Length: 459
Image 1 (cartoon, rainbow, N blue to C red):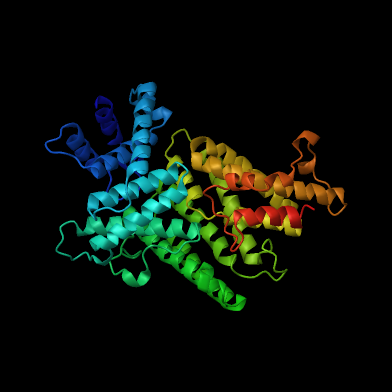
Image 2 (image 1 turned 30 degrees about the horizontal axis):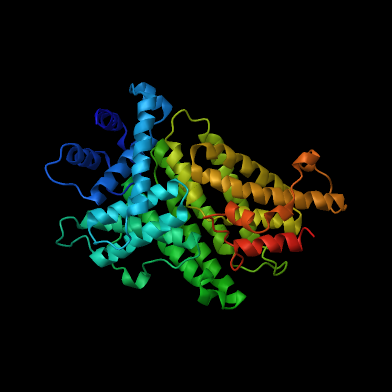
């Protein structure tokens, strides 16, 4: 208890840093909830305790080594407290049923558990909790609340609803699923970009809602079962309209006045990279003029993918030199909330077009992910998948050099002990490598991808 109180006092020096973007979970509400847990006058519900544990884990996680020394914390005691919160949340994730009473606290608990699971590299389970939270929002009527409602908590419930809506839409698209809530059911008041110009948190909420609606349309118009059965020309036309919408949203994002606030600039940069990845996903639906192979992509898709990967690499080079750890949340969410598409597209250009420039970009990206993975289990898992794709591409390029199809590059001059055997990816190895990750390759799933690559390109 003493450590919690001391940490809360320290967090008051920069509350937005230690509680970044967590709906209505902030230093004030956390202080109030901790008082109710440690000095209870009535019983606390399981959902309430889950919310408190999520808040404490987030706060502890955002304290870096420099902060601990600055505020006089014992590092070992701090790590033990953080580990205890994580253990409690893992227990809550295992034991929480997904058929629950639609209360505000229960919705908040499911939302925060979803965020915790995403940050600890369990995105598919995170989607299950986000979907459950979305269903409870609908059961509780949050999807049709307005700001002028007689409910005294209307604004708080509406903001929480849009947070759930955005998480559910983003994760659903990444896994190729239809979202839990459909546009035609939602009439809740929503913040607009014009209204949010002077309020940073409201502005980012508005951007998130606009992106969520766009993500829903991307799935419905380009990747749903009905969309897959439509003509390539029809999908290409829709993709370009959706790309225009995304470019407009990106322009609105970059126009926001940061007032030279580093945290705000980091958040804008992170969201911009997410948008770049989605642009690649949108253009992936446009058929390439080079052929029907799933590893051929249109020029716009390749350009957007290169821009996204270069952006990730540049951002990490900047963040890794920071003394504080405020960037951890931004880089973690930037990677984990983005589609896997850009790296797959680069892989396709290397294998199908023999692009050495893209192979070098893949190499830098893998090195970036390895470095960033030290701070995130989710990013570390993404690194493992991307490294395997890079090794596949490198093996293919080495084979083309051996056959005299390409000029030799120092990138491929490696000891024989490092030669990669693509046939090792048959069966369970491939599935384990891509556990919980969506490839974004339309009809190609992980098992089909193994036989496709080894059979078509490495025979």
